[in-house]
Image 1 (cartoon, one colour):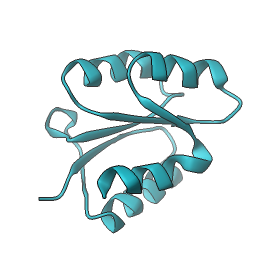
Image 2 (tube, helix red, strand yellow; image 1 turned 90 degrees about the vertical axis):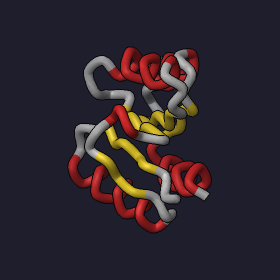
Image 3 (cartoon, helix red, strand yellow; image 1 turned 60 degrees about the vertical axis):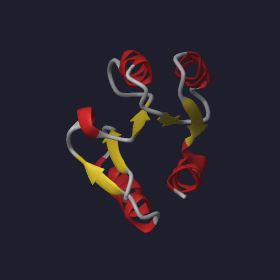
Image 4 (cartoon, helix red, strand yellow; image 1 turned 180 degrees about the vertical axis):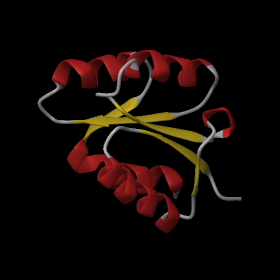
Length: 99
């Protein structure tokens, strides 16, 4: 069964790239966060760390990503329970989590 992946991000072009990676990895992009098997969260969206905590608390794995210069936000995402990577690694890590 395909993993259901929820994408929480602000950049539509990056969303398209991540959506293509989900499909290439055999997953399915879903619009409802409640039914997802994996959440992918842009650390720059408002309330990102709180959203990460919510997913982690409910047992949903989280892949968080953001600019490599946003070290404090990446650390906060990790502290909240996410796997946090810079933008340059998110596609590779996403494919690994789907595999």
